[in-house]
Length: 265
Image 1 (tube, rainbow, N blue to C red):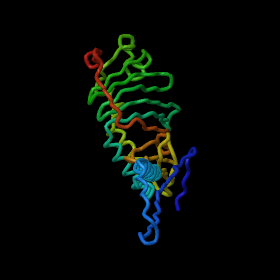
Image 2: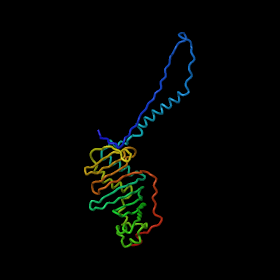
Image 3: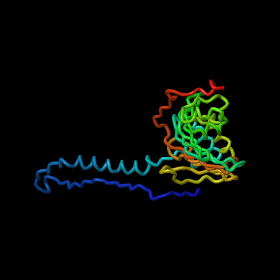
């Protein structure tokens, strides 16, 4: 039997109500005829309410908590199904932090992605940059220090605090900032999932948890589409990612005006 852990109280109450009538048949020879009491005009209404109560109880106990079966899957299947569900999502918000094991630096990102496009912020150390990625075009806006950090020190004063359309070379560091890019990145981690699959709640949603011998853990939704909800990574680049706001209405467009970095070369 798998271990089940839940955060916070939860449950449903089922109620059932039945109505029963009794009759007292008689014969004309045994006793005089009596007038039959008219049927109560409320009887139909009470029966309808009773059925509604029963139906509501059944819904609360069953339909509202029906799982997608991921709790019965192997760790490998949990990984495969969650990655495919992410690939099929119309949009998603990803908040995460990654640390490069070869350095002490960390990168934090807060992104909304829809297909090949993304927008949000990327923070490396004390340097914050806004990002808009529309298909193959990537635009950033940051301080002088940001443009110096990406190798554009000569033009940093000119570019500071302006939207800049990055060259292909400069944009390469953001090539994974799309839904498909995150699918590929997660694929490297979920391939190592093994061991026990457990369940718990994440952000108010029921989830399954699968881990790897190296310490990486994946939380995937246990109701609805089995999308990733959280990932903790302890192999390679250490960090974590939270996934939320799936299929929200998202509009990602290029800045109305920008400096083309390629034209300054």
